[in-house]
Amino acid sequence: MKEEQYEQLENEVLRGQRAQRAYDEFIKDFIQFKKLTLFNNFCAVSINEPDKLMEARRLVTVLEDLESEILSITNSGKMAAKTLEGV
Image (cartoon, rainbow, N blue to C red; front, side):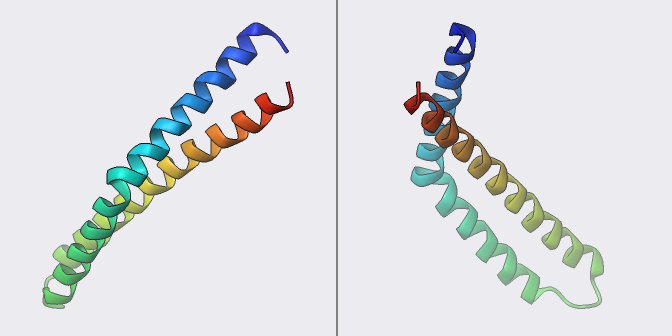
């Protein structure tokens, strides 16, 4: 394996580890709390206010996308670590 590829994999491992730490220590609980808050707000909004209902749904989608991206980074780091094990 070329040194450049090795360094890229090492950087991917470090990035994944940082993302995992951030997720475990803060982001996971933050997202769960925000989803619950948005759900409660959604339930409190009148059906006659579709804009507010759509905004609550949009915010949940944004949170889910953020969580998905962070988990993707952590998984990429894990795969890079497995690749480095074989070297």
